[in-house]
Image 1 (tube, helix red, strand yellow):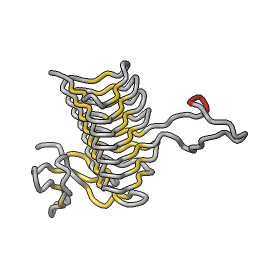
Image 2 (cartoon, one colour):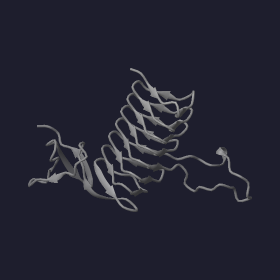
Image 3 (cartoon, helix red, strand yellow):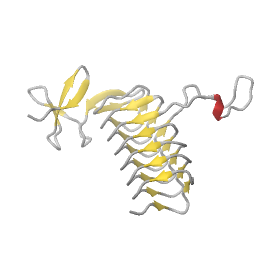
Image 4 (cartoon, helix red, strand yellow):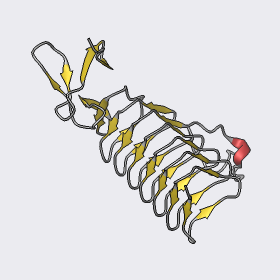
Length: 199
C-alpha cells in the first residue's frame, strides 16, 4: 500500500509513516514521529517530535498533538483539538532569558484504543483518555478519563457511558448497560465500566 503525502505537507525525514497513511495539505509531522498503517493527518495538523500513533488513527484539520503524546489504535482526534505538554509553561526563565528545550520536562497525553476527542477540546497533560472513551466537543480534560466514559464540560466530567459504537448506553432492568446500536452489554462496578463476559 502506498503512503500519500501531498506536496504542501512538511514531513521530516526521520518520521515513520505506515502503509496506507495520508498526510494532507499544510500538515507537519516532526522527526521521530511514528504513525501506524492507514492513519489520516488532516490539513494543518501538527504531530510533534517522537509522537507515537497506532494504526487507523485520524487527526482532523488543525489538530495539534504535541510530544510525547501516545495514541493507540483507532484514535479519533477532532478538528482544532490541542494536546498540551507542559505543567507550567513559560517562554522565559525567571532571569528573563528565553527558555530552551532543555529547560522543562515534557509531559504527554495518552489516548487508549478507540478513544475519540471532539472538536476544539483541550487535553491538559498529563492525562490518559481511556479505551473507547468519548470527549465531547469543546471540553477541557484535566483528569484521566475512564474506559467507555462520555465526558463533557470545563473541566470535563463524566455524563454518560458509551459503547464501542460511540452511542450512549442504556441501562436495562437488570442494571446491565446495553448499546442500542450493537446490542453489546457492559457492567458497571465502582464507577468503572467493563465489557460483559459472554455466557
